[in-house]
Image (cartoon, rainbow, N blue to C red):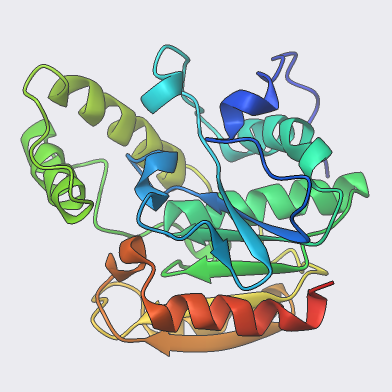
Length: 255
């Protein structure tokens, strides 16, 4: 069931995307960030993977949208994102998300499917439990601000960003805590099967989400399973194994 309209007017699509997608691209890959990060977390990715133009999606409350309020629930996000991104879904496209980003992809795909819009040709869901099971990851609402700051700093260093400036740390923690609370509050009832095929991606050194966990996505549609070398943050650098997987799995839908 589609949630009622929120009355919240979505910002222009230009604020949802780091750059305007090319009119020449034959297909697009919209990438959703994981908890506490923004679209810049995909700066280590190439501009194109196979036929797909990489299009990082920006959420409110971070980076160039820092002055906006972040989302508190997935339904509001999905309603706004489906409208804001609709002009760019005019050709084959896919969605990629890791952890919270994967849940965002799923919620967005559900919204588009219920609205009768153009469906993604594939979802790439990395290191994520099925929504009906509840969220689990490296962050938790019970963590202190100090602990959240340490974990977030580890992610930022992995991105090559150095240390978070002390003046910006409270804001970064606030964004992260909002994301974590939203994730732990998201538990839609039962599987909602998607018409779009799914690539469920796991990482050998991920202590939280294993192959058996990812098998639960089978109840959500047509799923192919992959396990790649690396830890849960390996995707940040777009390793060759991941980009090859994305290009290969999307190949049947490529124009």
